[in-house]
Amino acid sequence: MRYVDRSLVREPASLAFEGSDGALERAQAAAYYAQVPEPEKSYGFRAYKNDDVKEALRALFHGKCAYCEIRYEGSQPVDVEHYRPKGGIEETPGHRGYWWLAASWTNLLPSCIDCNRRRRQVSADYDMSPDELELAHADLENAEPGGKQNAFPTFDEVWAEPNEDLEQLEKPLLIDPTRTDPSQVFVWPNAEISVVLASPQGMKSDYPCAKTSIDIYALNRIGLVQSRLEMRQDLDSNLQLLRMNAEDAMAADGEQRAHLINRIAEHILALRRRYEDPKHSFSAMFSAHLDAFENELTQLLY
Image (tube, rainbow, N blue to C red; front, side, top):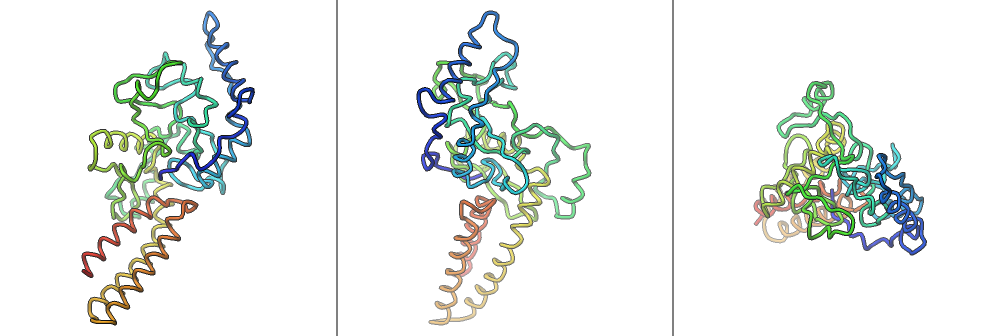
């Protein structure tokens, strides 16, 4: 997960204006929920599925899932995900959900199926080996529900109703990458496999938000961890070559040493341009590993 500035893409026209599909649907939903007795079923929202909404989300996130950064376009249709659920809240069954935000641009994110839909998932442990990771696929006894669906936990178990101030009232436990910079709350340890963990550093509120987000979005599910590991192994090969170059630099002196260090710096810059590109899957993971590698080289060479 990486931070994305939502202002970089204009709000889709079908949601933005008075008289738009989104505005009309909000008015219809308000009338629907105002009925007495209140309807048992949720309103059937459609505006958020409009083509211009999907295209705007694709452009904003470069065809990647907002939560796990996997490129969904190659294998599955995108789920237009509601950060605040539109049809109900799992943690408080009597709440009708944030129906008034169903067509709100700032509440919509693109998600892969596994991050958004509730499915049984097996999660990887930090200390697993790649072989153990492969075997874990068959460990169905340890499968647990994963995927956001209607989950929206908060710190104080308080959820807003229509016309209440969301920002003042609520303290969400889930991270929205257009509101929070995930790099400040997640860490990517240099383990044998590619798991993400909640950072023990920072503000007290950060850790539970990161931990809850990892669990609910299933960010360490086996298949996802394997995909990250396969891509990280390519970076690891490049970094190992640079370590060998660093050893040569340590043995050299004068101009030769300076030349080797400059070449290493150029290679790292090239790797950053490649792996940290917002279009690249798992760019947040790669950025963290490159930061750690540069720190390692700094201690080695200076």
